[in-house]
Length: 92
Image (cartoon, rainbow, N blue to C red; front, side):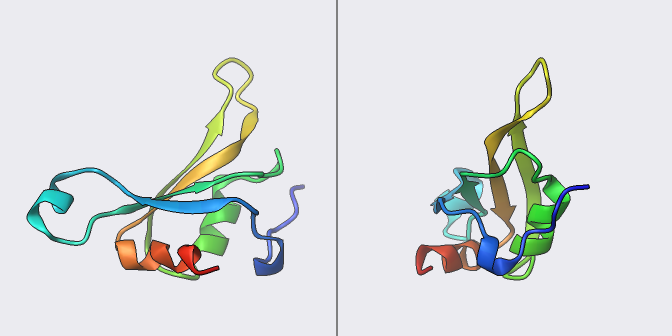
């Protein structure tokens, strides 16, 4: 059974970048896509949702996996509905 991730054990490499799309062009807040690196191979989407959902509304989470073996590649993308929610990690 995979261990739960606490706020103190959060992944080390977290950066944010606004997702490209029509929201950017119209001036409305864009979605925010966070790259989350240095993940333990046992970390899954539900654990990331529990952790990152504490900051704001998460739209989607994708743990990147090897296409053949389906094993984690050690990084993920977390997408927030509001760019201001995800930008919290720029200050951490």
